[in-house]
Length: 89
Image 1: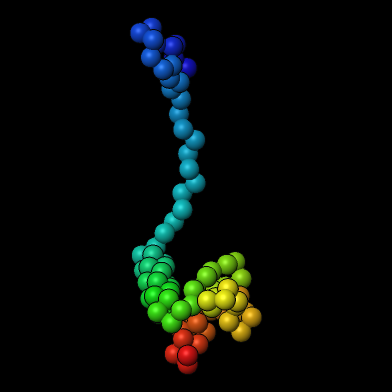
Image 2: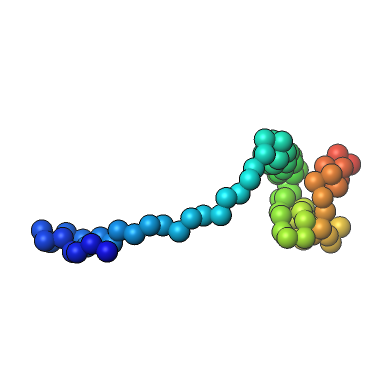
């Protein structure tokens, strides 16, 4: 710990930061995550063009209509199900 500055500035404490846990990432995993994100964004735009909103929760995805009701009363759809539903609509 260092002493407060004599010139009236803000006192600073110097200490080592705790080490963050190392998270191993792989290129294929990063590429897969990026493709999932791009697909979700594309489906979000398609849903918005039809007047729906795509939402995500810990259960899965849901399509919300303009009356704020879930389509098929489901909030556990996968991106594949969302895509097939948008193709049918």
